Length: 482
Image (cartoon, rainbow, N blue to C red; front, side):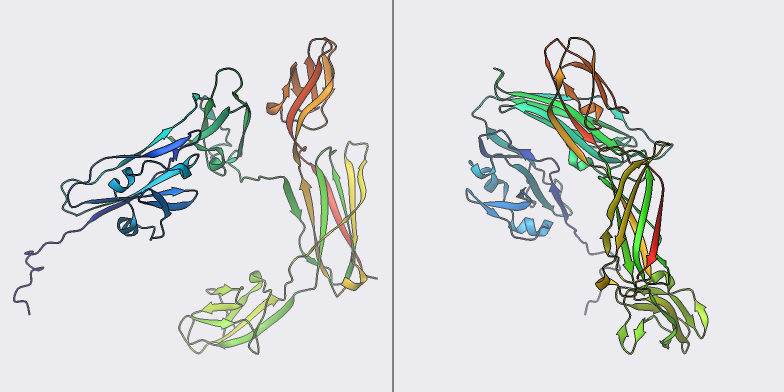
């Protein structure tokens, strides 16, 4: 037994270690190179400290065994890499890595030092590469572009796309950086900006060719960014409207849906109907007696759990008085309560709620015009006799579909040398139009106004998206099964 408490009188000491795991956010990019000739590692490794290296390529971790690449299978932790990674000398001894030509290499560095270390380990990793062909490169940045917002809301990026036109071995790489508040991010791929909040954006374009003879060209035709004004983002090509699920108390057989809407050219409307049997009801079902501790009770009878429970209808009672504080898990059909010991627990709820099965409705009338400029589209569906089984509950779903597409090299006609107008077949995105004539475009009428030298064939290319569907009113009706 110790005669003295060294902790009590501070006559002993502790030493804690210092560790770090560093993963590169920007890769060592070997695109366009013809050989990878090893690494250069700068920094220091003071006595008593340690630093080890592994590399992430194609979402896998690797290390070196002599001059060979082997997959790193150890723990992806500081301690794991410190024990299983390469030393700086092992990495710099490698002089040829042909398998990593054209790859993006992310160094991962584990550092370790005693808590009382005077100097800490440091590391900087760079790559030795060689290109057997000349490469000419130019990098430009756009202006900082502010995104429109509604009031004080923060805009959110829905999508960013760049369209490039390159020939030969030419490339044009477009990156984006985002300003959120007063802080700018680093440049990132366009796909990484999706669903991020941004007050402003800026693009960096890197053009690269291997010859100045004209055989290689690199250009950016357009950069298109879509963002919300701070409201919830709705992206994609489909929007849907659902009616309220209603029990009509009669077995249903037929449903009809009528929709009044503005004219559609490329966009489409579809309708679907769902038929279900009515839900069942449990009223003051005895669950058990409370023990005074937190416990679970099964929702069901005779050891069989009820399924399809409507969580919004669950009501619990203790000795006939409502319980307001309880939890539930409808996936396993259980409720969790904690109430006075000896209280009788009962429950009321709806169950047997069926899953929605959407049946495609048949198109009866397609865009019947009215004098007020609107159009009628009507759908109908009748349940097959073999499927009728007491379905008294139903609802409908209206689907609005905005297709997208690209027109390449469409011939509009031959130029007269005078001003001409052409109605494009689709609603073109104005910023994507390419035409071999001086032109202007009216998005509302889809009219392209242009002028070109006489006898020139006018060629036009563009991206398009269906018009925004506008529904003025809609109604649905059901009839009983015969």
